[in-house]
Length: 326
Image (cartoon, rainbow, N blue to C red):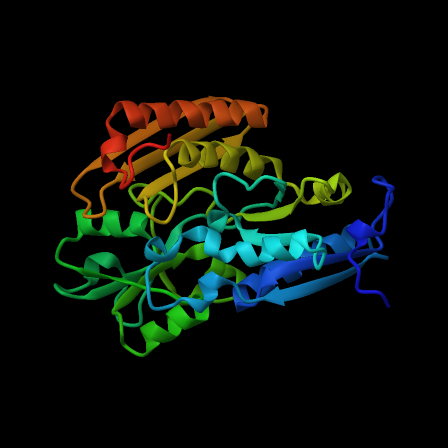
């Protein structure tokens, strides 16, 4: 059988797909996500041959330095985008919090799937909560956002970088390199590791990163047929919520170098959103909340913009390592 993706074989946008290739990172969590998308597509299109193209990204290869030092979240998506461009794949599945806030020209965020638990999780083999950790205990996290909150609330703890995929991070904890680690709850739950969670951290003050817990599917702009086929997988409450969150992050230059949080919920046409920008040491923080009637992505982005402007008015630009985006 030809290995050419379906996007190059069909010119009938409304026809059911015959073959789709999903680009994915090869970590266990990323493959779970890709397999989840595959299974959802198979339910929509039973006769479609859905394949997964596993790939190793630059972000997976560099494990000895913090993401903020080596190029940020985009390191997890560039190779997958190259597979879309050269025709090896039709769509790429990402953890949405890893997707840069400004999509490259020619690429679309074509689908946002229903969100898992967006909270952060406290994981430890010896302690039940952050409050139980003794003076000098080492806590691992990959996020400047988490680091800033931890330093503000628990200055007696030692916060250390934690890199690697989820299994690698858990192994480092189990080897005793850390007394506790903070991870996204969504990944643990998706891999059946919920029992390892000692505590789920509350949305205040541990506000999640924009898009945390959601899956995003990226496609090429020139293939609207694929976007059409993905439409049944879209989840409206999640799409609206993350649209507001990503607008806040976009306005403030959100990246791995910025301790920035944004979390929104939407139900019955009402959206609530909370956000903060902080210094890495946790000594300075700008907080903003808002709520409004929201019915469209444009409405959600307008609310996110208002929250970003509130943070900027409070002086958030002074907390950003490179200042506000031009």
